Amino acid sequence: MKKLTVELLLTGNELLSGDVIDSNSAFIAQQLGLLGLEVTRRVTVKDDLDMLSAEIAHQSKRADILIINGGLGPTVDDMTAHALANAANLPITCHKDAIEHLETWCKKRNYELNDANKKQAMLPQGCRIIANELGSAVGFSLVLNDCLIYTTPGVPRELKTMLRDEIIDDIRQEKHIEHTTDVSRFQVFGLGESTIQEMVNLKFPNWPQDIELGFRAAMPTLEIKLTSHQQSAHDNKPVWMKKLTDLLGAHVVGLGKTSMAQSLLEVLSERNKTVTFAESCTGGLMASQLTAMPGSSAVFEAGFVTYSNKMKSMMIDVSEQTLIEHGAVSREVVLEMLSGALNKSDADYGVAVSGIAGPSGGSEEKPVGLVWIAWGEHNNIQTCALYLPLGRTYFQQYVASAGLDLIKRHILAIEEAPVYLESRKAV
Image (tube, rainbow, N blue to C red):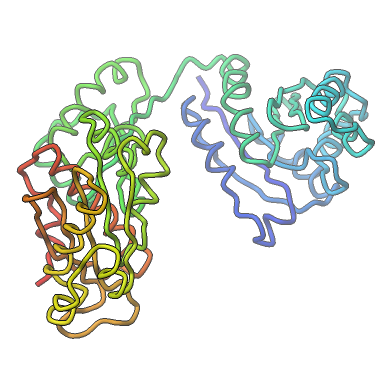
């Protein structure tokens, strides 16, 4: 069977000016990848009717599938419908189903259907409507020069719903695609791509060729993807998924897109335990990440952002003498920070961090990038010092992730130390 050619056409002056960053094409490519389809060309064109019409005609002669993104709204610079009609030499007519959609959409929101909205129902004659559950503008499709063309809204939320619920299945049926791609993902913290690849090469020299191993770095975690394209590989993949996660052990955060905070929340919830954080250099980032998760109120009552020495003493009882003798970034101080936070919150477990995020404030003895972390529970607190010369934002993200990771390992009684405790160890 001939490999299908897929192209994208993005419309909008704001994309070319940089006012809007294109994220839609990445999502479209990912969804098409599930069908084993690859985008071969992507073009962005300004809001110009003649240019859009010419580009649609040009791409339709080359591609088997063309997805147009943007230009379906009610304003004068939304030109996709007219441009496609021009390219196909079709008249623009008021589409009955599109008008009904607009009337329903406006009624639900107590809006009056005005002439600007009605423009969204003026579509190329004979086109097929694609439902838009979230927005006022329907999508539509038609065939031009044997190319199957789909128009989609520029609003990312609407595009994603339309692709997942309508277009992907439509392409599968229209192009008789039996081939499917299956992607399994999991998240890792504390190991780099090259390290993992070397571990795989040594442990699994017979890694199956029909299961692709891929990596996507997303600071501070790393996403590992196992991709298969045939049913036999789909069936075999869980076996290799388990082998790989067993190899990486506790460095695995969780399956899918599980975050560090979500992983910790699950561990705490299963045990009916609570946690607290005493944060200096991370400014409440650990608490913020945990409370972003549904169900966090059952495991988290309070955190303490004690950025200044004064607040360390006032809020969580860090001794002024300890601060004078050892400085805020020290083992002694994070021990007292954690003890104070545990006492104040009455939580079962806790993490305390104090470091130098930079870009200034360091010294030869305590350079920018140094952080002390304490974690554990009453009468069982551990500490470490890490050196993370990563830039302020990445430093904070890494420290927060390390704190969440270390306390999860502590709760699970994992004896094996994470690699970063040695590789990132402060000298």
